[in-house]
Image 1 (cartoon, helix red, strand yellow):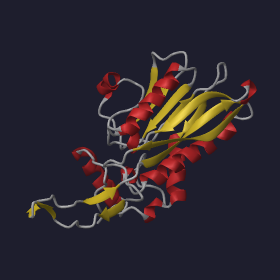
Image 2: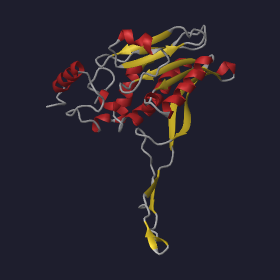
Image 3: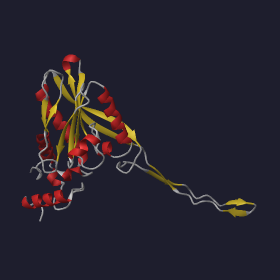
Image 4: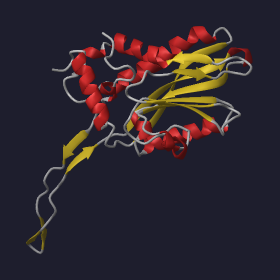
Length: 264
C-alpha cells in the first residue's frame, strides 16, 4: 500500500517511526544515485557519532538508581541533630547519537569528497548540543570545496538548512525544505519549498564540473521507503498525526483520508 499523501506523509514524522524512515531515506537515496554517477563517482553512507547529555528529546537506554542507607541519627552532646532526608540518586549516562548521511566521492581524484547529502533529524533542529554540533559540521562543509545538499522533511523545530532564514521567510507558507549549496558559489542557494499537498521534488545533486548534475527523485525514494518499511502497519490514519498541521491542511488531510476510506 502506498502512502495516501501525494508527497511527504506527516504521520511518519512521529518519534516512533522517524528514526527508521531517516535510515531508509539515506539508504535508498544512496541506491538511487549509484547507477547514475558511476563509474567516476561512488556514493556511500557515512556516519557521524557524538555523545551528548540526555535531554527532553533523547531517551536513554539505561539509568541507574540507588538509595543511600539511612544513617543513624547524629548526636551532639547527647542531643539528636536534625539531618536532611536522603535522596534517591538517579544516574543517567550520556546518550550516544549516530547520524548517517550520503557522501559522493570522485574516484578519479583518489576518492576526493565531492558532495554531502544530509537528511535532517530532530536532534539537528531542536535547541541543544545536537543542533550546535550539526551547525558546526555545516560550517566546516561550507568553508570547504564540498557541495552540501540538506533535506528537511520535519515540520517541527527550527529551520536549520544553510540557506538563511531571512531569505526563506518570504516564500512561506512551506512545510518541508531541500537546500543545495554549491562549492564555489556560496552566495546562491537552490531551495525547493514543499507543501503538504505537493509531490516531493526531483533534486539536482551537483558533482564536479563540467559533469552534469545527477537527479535524485526524492518522491520515488520516499515511496520506496514507505512500501519496504510497511509503514501502513504502524500508522492509524483515523487519528490526528503527532506532527501539527495548519487548520487548512488538517481539513484537507481529513477529506483526503476519508476519500481513501482510511478515516471514518
